[in-house]
Image (cartoon, rainbow, N blue to C red; front, side, top):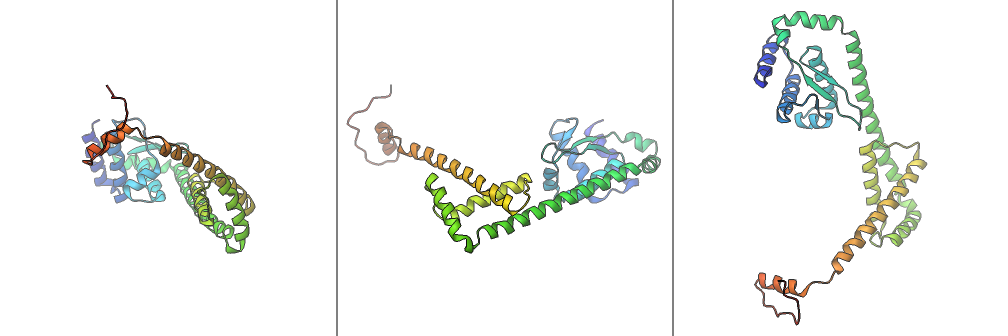
Amino acid sequence: MTYIDLINNFWRMHGSQEFGPNEIALYFYLLNECNRQGWPSPLVRPNSKICLGLGMTEPTLIRCRNKLKLRGVLDFESGKKSRKAPSYYLKDISSNISSGVSSNVSSNESSGVSIYKTIRQEENKTKENSSTTTRGCEENSRNLEIYFDARNSQLLEQVVMELHRVNPSTKTISDFRRMAEAVVAEWELSGATHTGYRDWASHLINHVRILNRMSARDNARGGRKREQKINPFDEYIRKIDEGRSASAPEAFEIPF
Protein backbone atom coordinates (compact mmCIF):
# COMPACT_ATOMS: atom_id res chain seq x y z
CA MET A 1 0.00 0.00 0.00
CA THR A 2 1.61 3.25 -1.16
CA TYR A 3 1.06 6.88 -0.19
CA ILE A 4 -0.92 7.45 -3.43
CA ASP A 5 -3.00 4.30 -2.81
CA LEU A 6 -4.05 5.59 0.60
CA ILE A 7 -5.06 8.93 -0.90
CA ASN A 8 -7.02 7.38 -3.80
CA ASN A 9 -8.78 4.84 -1.56
CA PHE A 10 -9.79 7.55 0.89
CA TRP A 11 -11.37 9.67 -1.84
CA ARG A 12 -13.15 6.63 -3.33
CA MET A 13 -14.55 5.88 0.12
CA HIS A 14 -15.49 9.54 0.50
CA GLY A 15 -17.74 9.15 -2.56
CA SER A 16 -20.08 6.94 -0.53
CA GLN A 17 -19.28 8.01 3.04
CA GLU A 18 -19.21 11.81 2.75
CA PHE A 19 -16.53 12.59 5.33
CA GLY A 20 -16.86 15.98 7.01
CA PRO A 21 -14.30 18.77 6.40
CA ASN A 22 -12.67 18.30 9.81
CA GLU A 23 -12.47 14.53 9.35
CA ILE A 24 -10.79 15.00 5.95
CA ALA A 25 -8.38 17.54 7.41
CA LEU A 26 -7.44 15.21 10.28
CA TYR A 27 -6.91 12.19 8.01
CA PHE A 28 -4.63 14.04 5.63
CA TYR A 29 -2.77 15.68 8.50
CA LEU A 30 -1.98 12.24 9.93
CA LEU A 31 -1.16 10.89 6.45
CA ASN A 32 1.27 13.76 5.84
CA GLU A 33 2.91 13.25 9.26
CA CYS A 34 3.37 9.53 8.56
CA ASN A 35 5.02 10.33 5.23
CA ARG A 36 7.17 13.11 6.74
CA GLN A 37 8.40 10.90 9.59
CA GLY A 38 9.21 7.88 7.41
CA TRP A 39 6.05 5.84 8.11
CA PRO A 40 6.43 4.99 11.79
CA SER A 41 4.03 2.41 13.20
CA PRO A 42 2.40 3.76 15.20
CA LEU A 43 2.49 7.49 14.57
CA VAL A 44 2.69 9.18 17.99
CA ARG A 45 1.36 12.74 18.02
CA PRO A 46 0.12 14.88 20.96
CA ASN A 47 -3.38 16.36 20.74
CA SER A 48 -1.95 19.83 21.31
CA LYS A 49 0.22 19.69 18.16
CA ILE A 50 -2.60 18.36 16.00
CA CYS A 51 -5.00 21.02 17.30
CA LEU A 52 -2.42 23.73 16.65
CA GLY A 53 -1.67 22.42 13.17
CA LEU A 54 -5.33 22.19 12.14
CA GLY A 55 -6.75 25.08 14.16
CA MET A 56 -9.36 22.88 15.86
CA THR A 57 -10.32 22.30 19.48
CA GLU A 58 -9.50 19.09 21.34
CA PRO A 59 -13.17 17.97 21.58
CA THR A 60 -13.46 18.40 17.78
CA LEU A 61 -10.28 16.37 17.26
CA ILE A 62 -11.61 13.56 19.47
CA ARG A 63 -14.96 13.46 17.67
CA CYS A 64 -13.26 13.35 14.26
CA ARG A 65 -10.82 10.58 15.10
CA ASN A 66 -13.61 8.50 16.65
CA LYS A 67 -15.70 8.85 13.47
CA LEU A 68 -12.72 7.90 11.30
CA LYS A 69 -12.13 4.86 13.50
CA LEU A 70 -15.78 3.79 13.19
CA ARG A 71 -15.52 4.01 9.40
CA GLY A 72 -12.39 1.85 9.42
CA VAL A 73 -9.85 4.28 7.97
CA LEU A 74 -7.67 4.47 11.07
CA ASP A 75 -7.20 3.11 14.55
CA PHE A 76 -5.72 4.82 17.60
CA GLU A 77 -4.81 4.40 21.24
CA SER A 78 -5.70 7.28 23.52
CA GLY A 79 -2.86 8.92 25.40
CA LYS A 80 -2.45 9.64 29.09
CA LYS A 81 -2.39 13.26 30.18
CA SER A 82 1.17 14.69 30.42
CA ARG A 83 2.67 11.19 30.23
CA LYS A 84 1.87 9.55 26.89
CA ALA A 85 0.69 10.98 23.56
CA PRO A 86 -1.97 9.19 21.45
CA SER A 87 -0.81 6.61 18.88
CA TYR A 88 -2.35 6.43 15.38
CA TYR A 89 -2.46 3.60 12.82
CA LEU A 90 -3.58 4.30 9.24
CA LYS A 91 -5.45 1.27 7.88
CA ASP A 92 -5.63 -0.27 4.41
CA ILE A 93 -9.22 0.48 3.37
CA SER A 94 -9.08 -1.09 -0.10
CA SER A 95 -10.81 -4.21 1.25
CA ASN A 96 -13.59 -2.06 2.68
CA ILE A 97 -14.18 -0.52 -0.74
CA SER A 98 -14.09 -3.81 -2.69
CA SER A 99 -16.34 -5.69 -0.29
CA GLY A 100 -18.87 -2.90 0.08
CA VAL A 101 -18.35 -0.03 2.43
CA SER A 102 -21.95 0.20 3.50
CA SER A 103 -22.06 -3.38 4.79
CA ASN A 104 -18.81 -2.86 6.67
CA VAL A 105 -20.06 0.33 8.30
CA SER A 106 -23.41 -1.21 9.25
CA SER A 107 -21.55 -4.13 10.81
CA ASN A 108 -19.39 -1.72 12.77
CA GLU A 109 -22.43 0.21 13.92
CA SER A 110 -24.39 -2.89 14.95
CA SER A 111 -21.53 -4.05 17.17
CA GLY A 112 -20.43 -0.57 18.14
CA VAL A 113 -22.44 0.14 21.29
CA SER A 114 -19.36 -0.21 23.44
CA ILE A 115 -17.37 1.98 21.04
CA TYR A 116 -19.97 4.75 21.26
CA LYS A 117 -19.89 4.41 25.03
CA THR A 118 -16.11 4.81 24.96
CA ILE A 119 -16.44 7.84 22.68
CA ARG A 120 -18.89 9.50 25.05
CA GLN A 121 -16.67 8.73 28.05
CA GLU A 122 -13.62 10.17 26.29
CA GLU A 123 -15.48 13.32 25.24
CA ASN A 124 -16.83 13.79 28.76
CA LYS A 125 -13.35 13.27 30.20
CA THR A 126 -11.95 15.94 27.85
CA LYS A 127 -14.71 18.38 28.83
CA GLU A 128 -14.05 17.65 32.49
CA ASN A 129 -10.30 18.23 32.10
CA SER A 130 -10.94 21.47 30.20
CA SER A 131 -13.38 22.62 32.87
CA THR A 132 -10.92 21.74 35.64
CA THR A 133 -8.14 23.69 33.90
CA THR A 134 -10.40 26.73 33.53
CA ARG A 135 -11.42 26.57 37.18
CA GLY A 136 -7.74 26.25 38.18
CA CYS A 137 -6.78 29.37 36.20
CA GLU A 138 -9.65 31.35 37.71
CA GLU A 139 -8.73 30.17 41.21
CA ASN A 140 -5.07 31.13 40.73
CA SER A 141 -6.01 34.60 39.46
CA ARG A 142 -8.37 35.13 42.39
CA ASN A 143 -5.80 33.93 44.94
CA LEU A 144 -3.10 36.19 43.47
CA GLU A 145 -5.36 39.21 43.86
CA ILE A 146 -6.13 38.25 47.46
CA TYR A 147 -2.47 37.60 48.29
CA PHE A 148 -1.22 40.87 46.80
CA ASP A 149 -4.09 43.01 48.06
CA ALA A 150 -2.91 46.44 49.24
CA ARG A 151 -4.18 45.64 52.73
CA ASN A 152 -1.45 43.00 52.98
CA SER A 153 1.33 45.46 52.10
CA GLN A 154 3.02 45.23 55.50
CA LEU A 155 3.28 41.45 55.30
CA LEU A 156 4.38 41.65 51.66
CA GLU A 157 7.15 44.12 52.54
CA GLN A 158 8.45 41.69 55.16
CA VAL A 159 8.56 38.92 52.57
CA VAL A 160 10.36 41.23 50.12
CA MET A 161 12.99 42.02 52.78
CA GLU A 162 13.54 38.29 53.32
CA LEU A 163 13.88 37.70 49.57
CA HIS A 164 16.18 40.71 49.19
CA ARG A 165 18.63 39.32 51.76
CA VAL A 166 19.06 36.27 49.54
CA ASN A 167 18.84 38.05 46.19
CA PRO A 168 19.65 41.80 46.17
CA SER A 169 17.91 42.22 42.80
CA THR A 170 14.56 41.49 44.48
CA LYS A 171 13.70 44.93 45.82
CA THR A 172 9.98 45.60 45.52
CA ILE A 173 6.58 43.97 45.86
CA SER A 174 6.37 44.10 42.06
CA ASP A 175 9.51 41.94 41.85
CA PHE A 176 7.92 39.52 44.29
CA ARG A 177 4.70 39.42 42.29
CA ARG A 178 6.49 38.73 39.00
CA MET A 179 8.08 35.64 40.54
CA ALA A 180 4.74 34.58 42.02
CA GLU A 181 3.08 34.88 38.59
CA ALA A 182 5.86 32.78 37.05
CA VAL A 183 5.26 30.07 39.67
CA VAL A 184 1.49 30.14 39.06
CA ALA A 185 2.02 29.91 35.28
CA GLU A 186 4.09 26.75 35.82
CA TRP A 187 1.33 25.30 38.02
CA GLU A 188 -1.24 25.88 35.29
CA LEU A 189 0.95 24.14 32.71
CA SER A 190 1.56 21.14 34.97
CA GLY A 191 -2.03 20.96 36.27
CA ALA A 192 -1.00 21.37 39.92
CA THR A 193 -3.91 21.64 42.39
CA HIS A 194 -4.28 22.78 46.00
CA THR A 195 -6.72 21.97 48.77
CA GLY A 196 -7.50 25.60 49.61
CA TYR A 197 -6.15 29.12 49.87
CA ARG A 198 -3.85 28.37 52.82
CA ASP A 199 -2.32 25.41 50.97
CA TRP A 200 -2.01 27.54 47.80
CA ALA A 201 -0.30 30.42 49.68
CA SER A 202 2.08 28.08 51.51
CA HIS A 203 3.20 26.41 48.28
CA LEU A 204 3.48 29.78 46.55
CA ILE A 205 5.94 31.31 49.02
CA ASN A 206 8.04 28.11 49.10
CA HIS A 207 8.29 28.04 45.30
CA VAL A 208 9.06 31.77 45.15
CA ARG A 209 11.91 31.28 47.65
CA ILE A 210 13.37 28.55 45.43
CA LEU A 211 13.01 30.73 42.32
CA ASN A 212 14.58 33.67 44.16
CA ARG A 213 17.62 31.57 45.20
CA MET A 214 18.05 30.32 41.62
CA SER A 215 17.92 33.91 40.35
CA ALA A 216 20.54 34.96 42.93
CA ARG A 217 22.89 32.16 41.78
CA ASP A 218 22.41 33.15 38.13
CA ASN A 219 23.15 36.78 38.94
CA ALA A 220 26.28 35.78 40.87
CA ARG A 221 27.57 33.69 37.96
CA GLY A 222 26.89 36.56 35.56
CA GLY A 223 28.73 38.98 37.85
CA ARG A 224 31.79 36.73 38.02
CA LYS A 225 31.91 36.57 34.23
CA ARG A 226 31.74 40.36 33.97
CA GLU A 227 34.55 40.70 36.53
CA GLN A 228 36.95 38.51 34.58
CA LYS A 229 40.09 40.45 33.63
CA ILE A 230 40.28 41.45 29.99
CA ASN A 231 43.37 40.17 28.19
CA PRO A 232 45.24 43.32 27.02
CA PHE A 233 46.29 41.64 23.76
CA ASP A 234 42.65 40.78 22.94
CA GLU A 235 41.60 44.35 23.72
CA TYR A 236 44.39 45.73 21.49
CA ILE A 237 43.36 43.50 18.55
CA ARG A 238 39.68 44.37 19.03
CA LYS A 239 40.39 48.11 18.75
CA ILE A 240 42.46 47.57 15.59
CA ASP A 241 39.66 45.49 14.03
CA GLU A 242 37.22 48.30 14.79
CA GLY A 243 39.48 50.80 13.04
CA ARG A 244 40.26 52.69 16.22
CA SER A 245 43.71 53.91 17.21
CA ALA A 246 45.26 51.76 19.86
CA SER A 247 48.44 51.78 21.82
CA ALA A 248 50.16 48.46 22.13
CA PRO A 249 50.11 46.99 25.62
CA GLU A 250 53.30 47.46 27.60
CA ALA A 251 53.82 43.72 27.74
CA PHE A 252 51.96 40.72 26.46
CA GLU A 253 52.82 37.27 25.20
CA ILE A 254 52.75 36.86 21.42
CA PRO A 255 50.35 33.96 20.77
CA PHE A 256 52.54 31.77 18.53
